Image (cartoon, rainbow, N blue to C red; front, top):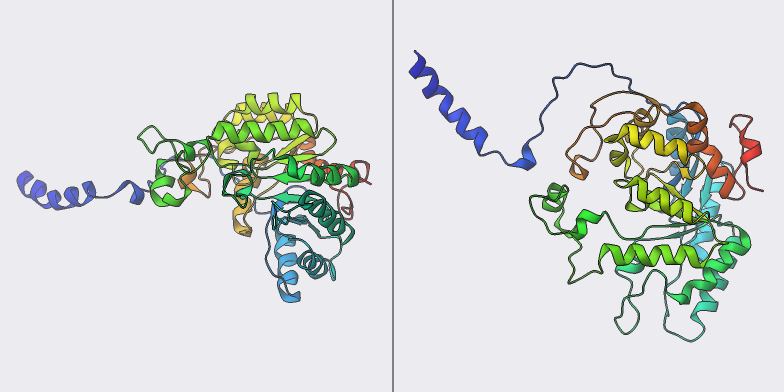
Length: 365
């Protein structure tokens, strides 16, 4: 009988052994308390979102979805410039003037032409007059953007100094995305903790023959921050230092004009709950809520991470890291700053309508 069972089991074992790591998705047998949070404890501002072309029906649906999760204001970072910026502001604010903010983007056309720096700065100034409440710089800046000679444009290129001076003049923040997670710049070896992401999405790799080193990009970004102390910068994605919060803290200590946000890096925080909780308490005045992708059902992972003390739960991007999450259980005052008070402080013109009473004291005028 034993030999028969072994014979029958052999094909099943052989099939299991041919399964690839990409297919392996174990289901935890751990039984611990769960708190699924589908609506944020406090109304919140998402400072890192992207929306394309919008019509009235799409804006109305956006507001319904925002209400469902308690998002009071969405910041659309993909406003463009010129006529597109005007159109985006009009589409998002015509019916709901207090529910959206729109950030402009830089026009890189003619970057080597005489007068480009003045022209780019003048365009941003006009965009601000047309309703832009901030500036968003995408990740092509520093990595892929090249001049007419094929030379890479560094993050701290002086041609954009006048643009950042305009931001300081009008007191609008710059949300900047520089580089990518450090493991994507490193060899795809068995020691690389994002090996699975590189296997599934090989175009995300940043090999040295095509891109500058991660450390070089970070150094350029930090020099930019230091050169413009009167400009407020929001360093996107925790500045890719979510796995080294001590270093991120040093950056914030050194540069008081720099803030950060958590878009697309919540899994970095959830694997180090005690360290991350202490960090959030220490830097509670410098970190903002952001998500990056507009998938309303994924916000519950963020709420659960920041509001509960839950243990060993999944995050929404398993290829970002093969680990489980733990809640930070942030204090209420830290949550309020993170969810809305810090954004109200640094983004001009946001409405305090439907926020708690303490929001009015935080709002930037």
